Figure 1: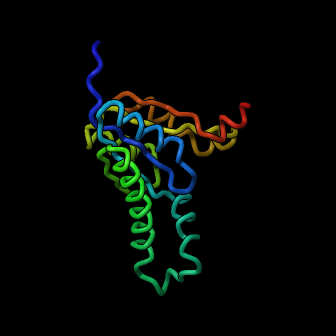
Figure 2: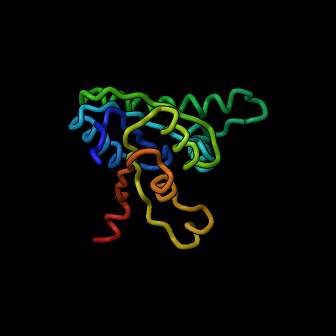
Length: 161
């Protein structure tokens, strides 16, 4: 089986943590392959809470545009990632959606966009976290419509040393 050329890479990013390692790796890989990259964020409950903290003490009842502000904030972060890729000569785009199941949203985006490769970051979790929440990178790897490249998170690398 001959691998098909990689023209579009999907890089899901968690806006609540430092994802500079996977982002940098994804951009460098895209540059080497001559591929485009799509940064993708799913605003699930933990992500929304982290973004809420950035907006201080906004009163959601009085501020009917609160959800839109959160989405705009996510788009702003994604825009910075797109600009970072452009500085490296890589064509990039960013997209954010609101959803509860990160893995399902990533898989939907991969299918609808026709990506050739997904680059995901794996996170070391406790057995309880894994049982309660599952591992998105593992679920994506098992059900993806294309190859998946898994990168260990920086925290995992530091714990191993």
